[in-house]
Amino acid sequence: MRAAGVKAMSLAVHSRSRVREFLRVLEGRKRVLVLSHNNPDPDSMGGAFGLRFLIEKALEIPTSFGYRGNIFRAENLEMVRSLGLGMVKASELDFGRFDSLVVVDTQPGFGHTVLPAGMSLDGVIDHHVPPKEGNEIEVRFSDVRTDIGATCSIVTEYLMDLDYEIPPRVATALLYGIRTDTADLSRNTGPIDEKAYLHLMLRADRKALARISRPSLPKDYFRAFRKAMNGVRIYGKVVVCSLGETENPEIVAELADLLLRLQDAEWVVTGGLYEGTYYISVRAKTWTSDAWHLLSEVLRDEGSFGGHGTVGGGSIPLADDSPRGLRRLERRLMKNLLEALGESQTAPTNLN
Image 1 (tube, rainbow, N blue to C red):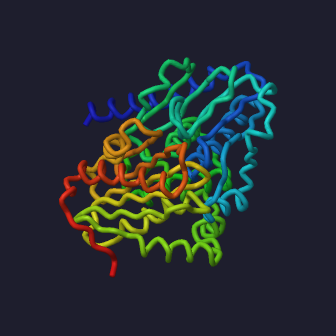
Image 2: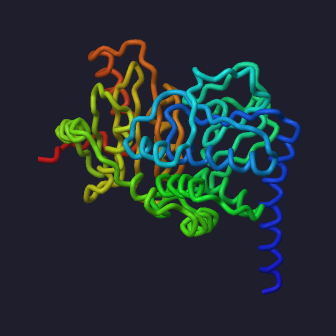
C-alpha cells in the first residue's frame, strides 16, 4: 500500500511539473497566439479556450484564438455561439502583434495545420500520433500524449494541477471536447480523461451543453444523409460510403459515426470532395483496432492524415477534382482499403 501511494504521488508531481514548465516557457511574452488545426473540432476549440484561460489567469498575458478554414457542423457552430469562444480567422490576424505561438490538438507536420511564417513555436499540446514529418521544427515545450483520449483532458489536468476554479463557460467547452473525442468516455480513454470529465461535469453549464449537443438542423442536412444512404456499400465487416461532391466536409465524419452503429460493422470508411480536397473518415468498433495504421495503408503517403485508436481522418488535395478524377481516386483508395482489411474478394451489398 505504501509503495502504491508513493507511485501515485510521483505521478501527480510529474503532472504538475508539466504545466509549470509550460508556463515558464511563456514568461516574458507580450501576446500569445493559440492556434488550432484547420476546420477546428470541439476538442481543438475547447482545448484552445481552456488554454487561453490558463495563460491569462496564470501569467496575465493577453491571448487570441486563431483558426483557418471553416466551421460547418451544427453542434460546433452552436458551441461557438453559446460559449462565446472569441475565435478569429487567421486571415484577419496581424501575426506581427504576437511574440508567441502555441498549437493545440495538432502538431507541426500535419497537413491540416499551417503555421504562420517566422513565428517561434513555444508550445505543442496534443494527443495524436506524431506525423512522419515536422519534427525538425524547434518547439520549446511539447506535451504529446497518445494514451489520452482528448486534448481537452490534458488542458483540464493543467487547470486542476494549479487548483484553478474553472468558470462554467470554460468547463463546458472542455467537457464537450472530451465528450466528442471519446464518445462520452466509451473509446480511447484513460484515467486522466475520466478524472477530467467528472471534474468538469460539476462545473459545466448543463443548459448550454444541451443546446450544443442538440442544435436545430436545416433540411439540407437530412437531404445529404438521404443521398449518402443510397451510396452505402458493405464488404463483409467493412462499410464504405462516398458522398461524392459535398457542400459540407463535416458530414463525412458525421456519416461515419452514424454508420458505425450498423449491426455487424467492424470498420466504417466514408469520403467526400469539398472545394478540391477529398476528406476521408475512419471509424472502428473494436478497441484493438488502429485507425491511424489503416489510414497509412489506404493513403500510402497520399495527402495527410491523423488518428487515435478507433477514430481517424485524412485529406487529399486533388489536382483533378473532376468527376473522372474523383472516381479514379476512390477506386484507388477502395482497392487499398479492401486489401488492408482482407475483404478484396468480398462481393458488396447495399442497405436494401
